[in-house]
Length: 292
Image (cartoon, rainbow, N blue to C red; front, side, top):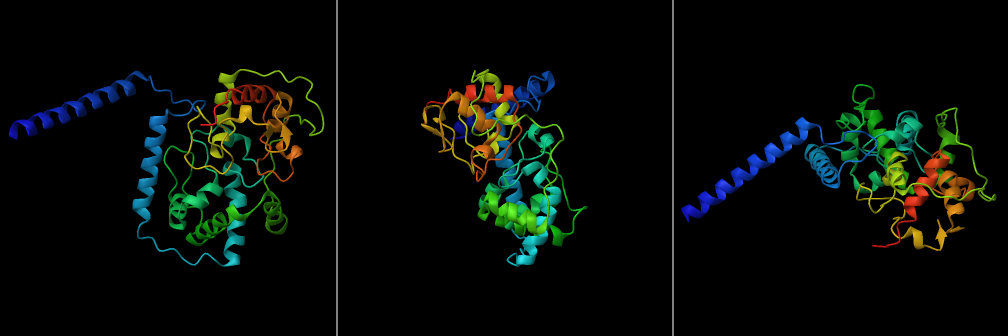
């Protein structure tokens, strides 16, 4: 028995040392790509995501949540959300600002956050922020009352359609202006002059830059486990795009660049996808024949 325990102890110690050495080599050599144009590897991504969830859960286990059901709370929260949050996270039918599209990890879809995170957890993240994620801490810039108001509104988000959100804007606030330089639009009724597809490998990377993984599960693209949009597995073999357009390369380009021109009620916002990026993304999407 003592021999077995000794062997097990030596094995564990050796493994720990080997892991530490390997980690040191990876860090020191710079072999790990830290650029924001590529996502973390799946192992690193899920390790960070699990660490985030467990860390937040530990620190909110005894947090007292006030009554968030007041209509005034949600309205006040919307005003701060519109001023400080929609620029990175977007909203139903509203695209994030251009600078947010290049963030890695991508800003979360708060519709999904409202469904899977508790009010206490959302409050904690807003108040304290998340290291190395682009999510700032608001505790020195917003009062606790304001933060809880934002939580109240975030919890309302899953119930809002794009039309509903526009109603909130007209009644309570305004959407920050997009950048002056806009991508030329393609009419929903026009035929794309050239439906030539681009580089699928480049499209796989571009999906990350336009935050597609914030809402969709995409084979071959590392992202969150929870999604608010349909999974894109098998999209190449579907008869229709978004249930409204025959699935052709020309229509795919049209949809990627101007979804609300095709379907004004779509929750997918116009993301100002460039023509070349749309061709590349479409090329990648047409490699997704497997529905698994």
